[in-house]
Length: 365
Image (cartoon, rainbow, N blue to C red; front, side, top):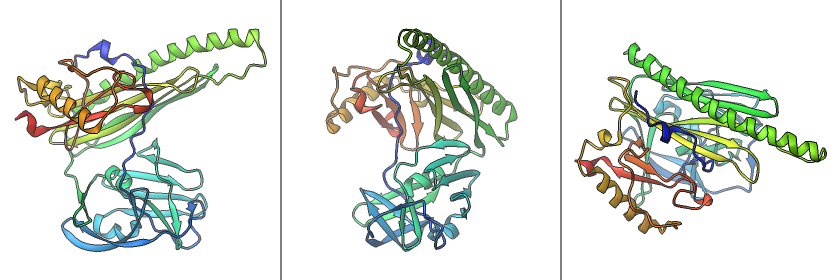
């Protein structure tokens, strides 16, 4: 696989945890949800749902424009299974070759072995723990839609490529630094040659980025030693290097994902490099931006126009005007189209994170 080494080197940016805004909930037996956030009683609303085309009504809670619902209402329709371990205050959700674990006591979440940020905290009400709907279901392989006019929430299973994605972890603490990197490993794919090719590539990419991050941390550690030699009472936070991946598309013979590598070397915040990959599952090769744009000769101008339009409509503040993308600009796919993003501090301030721009697949036809 040919890689653009310059683009694959670590970039400076901010850690962005993309949190989805419309959610869902889990019902637990009485007394089993002590660790969830206790709040003043919130109003429940009878909300229309279409689950795999079947209409029903389910009571939901809306808080801060986020919908919460008891998972018990969805188990039978979606084929998910849940259980609650009282001793550990752990919620387990299984289904569609996925595993989601929510630790109510320690407020941590793991998806297929990788730690995630849950976003909205669970809500405890009437002995039921409510969780964000979209956050849970989209990770479990379901599409969630919403019709503003009818208030109808639609849920249906995504027809994904037949493979499973698990996490491998590289972690180490010591010598004044901390390392914790998760990277994806696929299994169960019918073409084992392609599966091995992709897994080897992703492992090599993880190793390469870990080596680069470790080198930066070593330089920080040496600098910290000099500071402490001059001022033994100085308080210094050790440098850290973390990696977390997000699978954004696993359909139509393509697999798209990105890894955010976050390094903290001192100061108020760290920097993040986002490294995306989109694979052709027929060959195991990386797909170029032009290839996923249907080899349209005008793909650069099509993308440029869409970005400019979306910047204007969202009133996104730019440090300087956007002109054009590179022909081999980094991207990833989602269900709605090709996603181009600005790296942190590229066109916007640190606070804006990594703005994303979706260009529908139909624009390239």
